[in-house]
Length: 76
Image 1: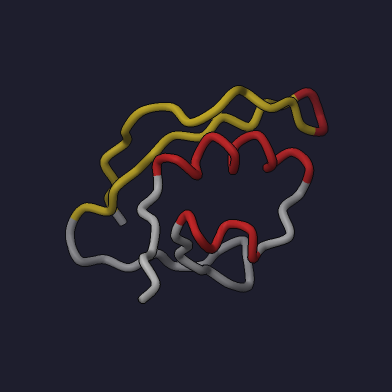
Image 2: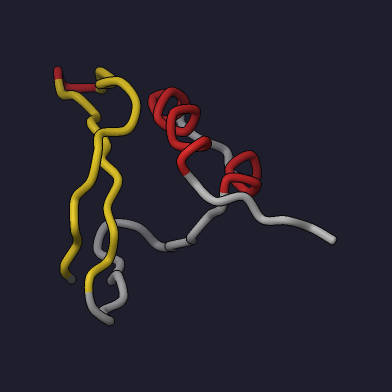
């Protein structure tokens, strides 16, 4: 799959093993769909759905920074 990498999202988050979690916005290019390799499920979320997921503590600052960048779903 091909992606176009955009701006960084949120702070660097230290994780186990002395590593850093660093997140960037990305856009799918072309008509390929993501293929699961390391996880058992994939789900696209709008900003309104972010609270529907139980996030790991290391993900919390990234999710907070990502929320204002995602589209909101208007409900009638």
